[in-house]
Image 1 (cartoon, rainbow, N blue to C red):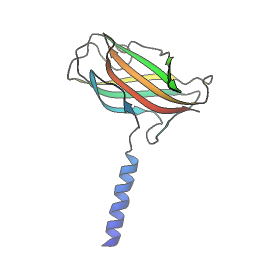
Image 2 (image 1 turned 30 degrees about the horizontal axis):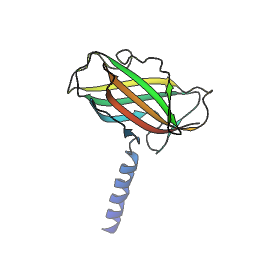
Image 3 (image 1 turned 180 degrees about the vertical axis):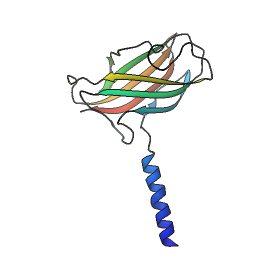
Length: 150
């Protein structure tokens, strides 16, 4: 019986470790509810490693808590408490992001974005703050992801 319990524990432990989610903090999602966040290559660590010369692929599943015609994405790298804006190839989240605008209150959506991690970026730890804002600048979602550029 002990061997069966040990095997069951190992299977359960393996499952729990395999399903660890990306570490992120909701930093003020007032007009939306974040359901899940995924970043390529960042699923099982306390720090998301952003490899120089690659692309970061972000997916956020959220529920909109407001009707809105427009959405805008903004990204900041927070270094030493100072937010530095990061240019997005496409800030209009109604285009090429998986969203079909207008967004409706109570509906679930999947937002996707891809941004290049330039080899020119310094190799540094950074807190990535990603916001999706509705037409009046209020956050549908706001997430912070502890990261490091390598």
